[in-house]
Image 1 (spheres, rainbow, N blue to C red):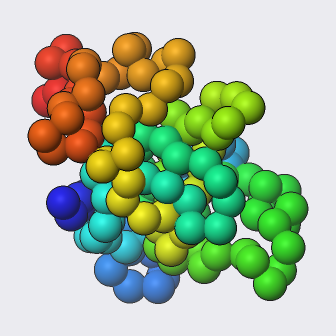
Image 2: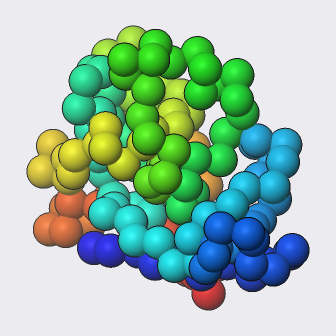
Length: 144
């Protein structure tokens, strides 16, 4: 499933052309993104990290990198993902714990066939795991 982002610019198009800006609370600054961006995954999809041993369910998507510079700089340069791609917020799990992860599109693969994710926050956002589709559906109250 492909998601499309259309944002309402708060400062209009920027000097780089057909882009919009929005404020990212995580980054603490305005972020410039293409007016339309394509995401490979959707909210409710279950994904697995390509390099690290964890998986999770997507609960939010940023059209481009929208976290702090400290977070970005903490990644070793050889492994640092490109900023100009979707980044996903996950309710994540590994063998030891559950947590929130922020992962670039290039580092994720679909993983719905492996079953549901065991994270305590899933029930706040999603209904039951849809086994046939291998994903979670948003609670009706969160759809618009």
